[in-house]
Structures are given as structure tokens and as C-alpha cells.
View 1 (cartoon, one colour):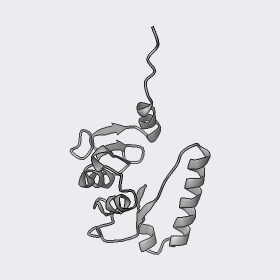
View 2 (cartoon, rainbow, N blue to C red; view 1 turned 60 degrees about the horizontal axis):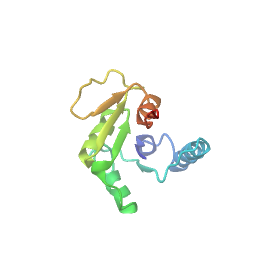
View 3 (tube, one colour; view 1 turned 90 degrees about the vertical axis):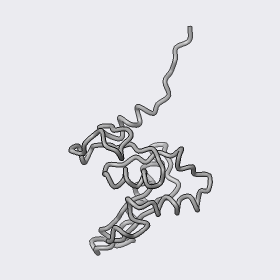
View 4 (cartoon, rainbow, N blue to C red; view 1 turned 45 degrees about the vertical axis):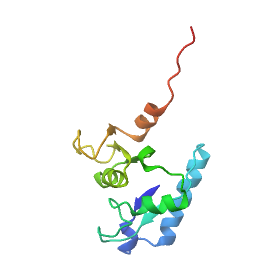
Length: 133
């Protein structure tokens, strides 16, 4: 997971606060049967920071930690254009969920697919069961 956390850089929350949020989120994901290997975040305020989305720095950090990652076979799912631009900058397929920004135009050069919400995307990823004859 990659996330911009400008609120830390602005002093609106501490890194300890952010860590607590992340710990809670990971616990809930595990309870639901999911997994999250690592969370990368940028607290920078300046969009020129390489680790701040839409720049691909966090993708490169993940690649260092998980060398088997293939960006051309990866999917960036997000709810902001900066997420889609991050995916494009790292060479990923992009999926926009319009939950918080439904006004975002589609088609859009940075967006490959668009879904109303994360659940709709997850449903589209389920394998299709072909009935036996």
C-alpha cells in the first residue's frame, strides 16, 4: 500500500498516530481474511518529493523490498488522479474507484478502468465459474 500523509508533515497528526491507524487497518484486513505486506507513506509537503505520489518513489522502495514485483503486471487502485498518475509513472495498470471523487472524468488518459467503489472492483476480479456440461 502507498499513501500520501501530508497531515503528518503539517503537524495535524504524529507518525505515532499514523502508525496506530495503520496497525488498526492491518488488524481489520487480517480479520477479514486479507493481507497487507507493507505500507509505504510520504509525509512530505512538497509535490517534488520523489516519494510523494504521483511520483513513483514509493513504488521503487517497494521494488527494493520485494524484488519480484513487476510493475507492468501490477495494478494501482486508488481514488484520486494522483494515484492514477503514480501508477502511470511506475508503469502500472490503473483502476480508479470513484467513491470520493465521482466528478473525475472518464475516459481519462491516466485511468484504465473505473468502478463505483472498491467492492465493485473486487467483484469484477472474482474468477468466473463455468458450469460443467
